[in-house]
Image (cartoon, rainbow, N blue to C red; front, side, top):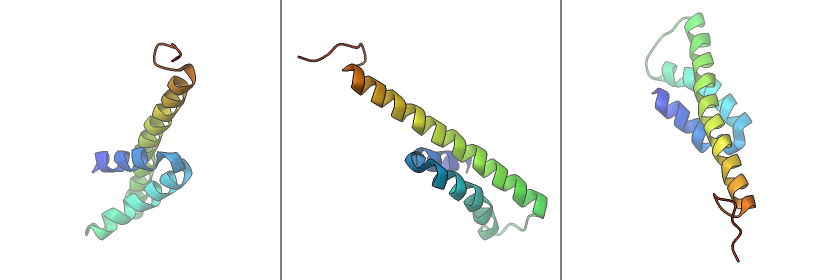
Length: 83
């Protein structure tokens, strides 16, 4: 399930604040709806892990976005401008 949460961050990385909130709240909810009955510390740990995993996906999205913007400004990957 961890790759799914990271994928959520990758897809929603443009709206990173909403993605982080959704991952932090959504992951414990998914566990609860999945039939688990965790204790309060387990729910807090799940929220923390959801946050960290979505953060990883959001970070990858933001890095890719910055790279694309940098490449498009320079005119190509080698900095050559098209004529």
